[in-house]
Image (cartoon, one colour):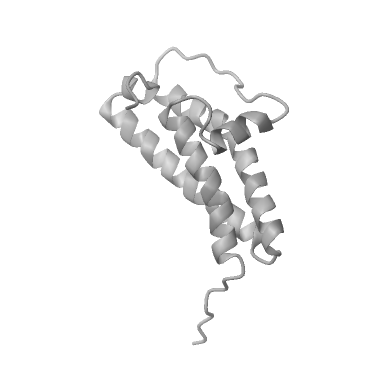
Length: 131
């Protein structure tokens, strides 16, 4: 299904590291979307979630490039983030109408999670235990 995806050019350790990095970034991004929006009304929660997603799609290429610098010899140290953030690219990936790759589809799923989690758990307050 994803034949030719750059993920498959990495060795097993590189793939595992990329998966772990992606998992941590995804959990952190969804948590941030929830945390920033948890006291807002539902439409504001959705907009905050979308905003967090757009910032993630803007900044994350640099994080991933830093990872690739560690595992691929000979890559030049460079800034890969473009200015300003490309909202159109984020929306294309959010709607699954762009490139057919693991990364694009992963970002699309993350975009939905950044909106759905704050909507579903927006006003959730963990119970406070008193000792």
